[in-house]
Length: 399
Image (cartoon, rainbow, N blue to C red; front, side, top):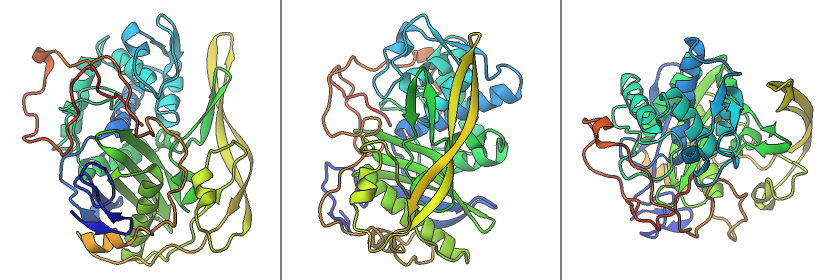
């Protein structure tokens, strides 16, 4: 067990430095690994899975198999997915673009399942196999997908390195679609859905990608940031809280930028009127603040004659710059330096609830499993730490 800035990791708790922790930072220009800690250890990806679902949707859009306005039918199976969800009703539809926006903001499991069924010819299990095969072709050698959402499945595993590879492909393969991952919010049928990725407001240069959480993985994040023409893609698995994960990711990105000669900058914290949206950011110990103006875009979807249209609306947002982050080190696989970069809070800070962001478990129906005939046979050997318990009482959470 490893000691870190937040104390000794408890065996049952997923946190930085625990057996569930892994991380990597890569230079997206050439794939060079800048920082790494257990990057090839298998972990449960949780809602990072939706990055692959989005990638498959982007490919279908590029190939003309679907359009942004293509209706996505909502089956009973998709509607029954555990939260986080849109609360879709069986027999209704949403558009492909609405489904994509729901994945990257709300991390909606019902929208992910419905989109997976559409792309899988009516079967989410078949789509999961398509995801796995495509992932292997992208170089994600230690990844197996079993559903489109990231809800718990003992055979659904990935690694920090594989998820960083996927992040790079999303940036490079679909530069026109990647911007969806920087959507701060969008309006779906009268409700405003906010993006779970707080780095978009808190870290200078961050422009995506995706958060993830299930009970058995802890808090995961793949993030991309660009400064002075240098783009980094980083992955962190196993945070104890969303706040800890975010702080650690920012420290890793700082270390990565420093290692390639990009001068460090101050973090940015956006203030929003929505109660509790960034409560943890404002409750943190900030040595000094200064007001800034920004024009943070938000995506608003309107329906005209039954057709949904998304548009960017820019509005002012006030920002504050906290004290500069900790100095970053250099090198690869510097586990001790990575762990030191997480500061010790004086008290546990409140965190904004995101998908499954709670330590309590709920009793939900047993997870669906792929048909035996559809399984990929070259699944990775061994399982990550903290296997999900495949029972009717297993908490199916994802974020």
